[in-house]
Image 1 (spheres, rainbow, N blue to C red):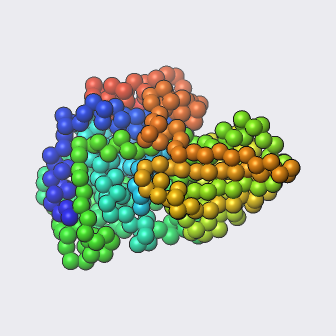
Image 2: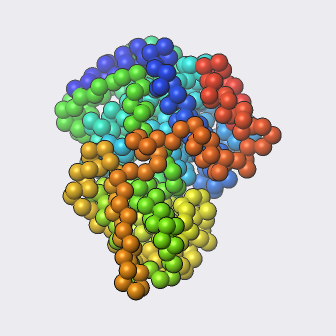
Image 3: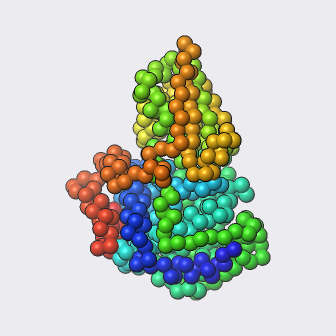
Length: 449
């Protein structure tokens, strides 16, 4: 089992020079994906409510509030900017057998810490590598979902680690920051069960804020329980049992997926499959008698009805965690993007009727395939005349086995955020990220101001 000191040593000892060229490139693509989604979320009401809350508390500060006027402290900037990254549910995911977190939840915290401390783009890459690595290793080796905790319980630790690197904490300060973050901020999974609401898209922002605040406390001499993982009633005793991690300088970033469609991670293969089927067979939605999806246990549990009703869909937060809604909307519209989450689209009779004839079941063989690294889905669409069309998927474009490169990511950014990036800002953003080692963090946040 790793000790809290060993995790802190990993943070202190990992520098930008340790990152391979492939890791650097992958981290830059993660950064572009995260920021593109954040820009697209600027007009959404929950992130705007976060902005109002932040500015009610602080008139100004040294860190950029992306897409807004003015600034804030690194703590409040982490909250605001992470809310933008996470709210639309269109960001990356790490695929572990028992947990599927979003490592990009740490991006807002790490960038805010880098801007506050006047760090370089290379420093930023090191902080991101640390955050992605720790998030992935915790998710893989010590999942918390079955114990009733939300995956942002991992995020607060990974974000604190990355922010500690950017803020230049020494070894004991880093250990304290991780200890405070991991001891004090364990989030309940009720966020993603039952009647889901907008907190689902903001929980990681709260974790990012708590992470940076923990780091600032440690910077100013506050000590936490420095045996967070190994101590009596610590992580091992309460959450995980014995576990180990195998920390590398960012190599876990290659196991992170890019979402092709707007929707929960576990829906990606099924959505891609039903769109392909609808287009290839030119399916008439009005003539569909039933849709049957066979999937893996995690998908059935989280978005197929195992943790609450997924057929009563009235809001965006409910829609992107409902396999019946996502499959119905994707079949009708041949797409699942931001437009499919407009309130009027969600409430329309065609999709509301079709989602109620979607049947979702878990198959043990598909569950085993998922745990071996695939994201399988088998879809049967039966028409009124009795004809049944089938499509089978083992992954989707954006899965680690079929990654989306720079061209695909730029297309994604253009599609969802292009209208918000006028006057050459789009090209400035892409080039700044591509050549991040030649820039300061302030150059990146300057494009986002």
